[in-house]
Length: 344
Image (tube, rainbow, N blue to C red):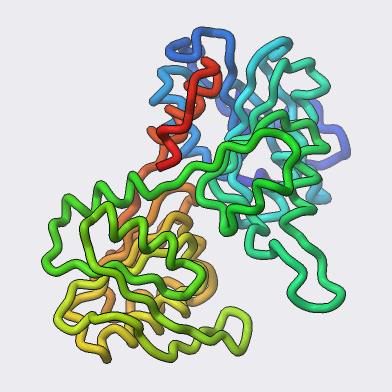
């Protein structure tokens, strides 16, 4: 009995006895040898199912729904005493609901005597609020880390957090994976002529350089000045893009303002064609409309965040799965073997 996929309709009363549930077939036991449990919140059930399939197992049964006043409810229906538990839950939109649901699941597992609670967070919300850049503002990323750790997480597994130093916000072990191997393999298969990898800002140069090195491509950088939040003004391009096929790489595409301004700047400098790749397709607000109106050829992204019908509304979007990457990391963590080779 599972309530995973969506926020449920309001249910009368403060303690409903038995809300409607969907059923799941008997659990399979594969690579996880029966001594580990894989659970999922409602943040990205499709990815969780793919990870479970990679591990040749089934997601553990849970009840997840909302009371009529909006409060979240969680009940783990499987015995997890002494088990190595992996909870898959990105804190994507709706960010606060998904974060709270993750905290409740972790707390439920802690109170059920789980041996180890591994929080698998494909997309770490609040990651862009990682420093105090103005007076009287919080460091929200640190607060989110404190909440997850206080709830009872024993280990964190995440993908491409916005700033690597966020790992230091946790005092428990953090395995920080990169989606680069998935994206780079696909870009290489595209066999694009005269490829140049482009960083959309100075902060992404290290990422772009790593892509360029593995793809044996040239490197270019776009200098950008942001005057207002979520509004980017591109100033100039550093590097030769004349007649080149440009591939912009970034960790997040949010409103797509930065991306579309970068595309314009590259075309003004004579780029032959412009593609883009990102790990986390937040795609909020006018992002889809901007991508459709942009001369960009294709946008590669991963399934760390569910994008719903956005890929249908924008045929330029192509989604690649990080399920094998996360599934392999989960297997190695459970078996206490090295995950170092997955970091590159």
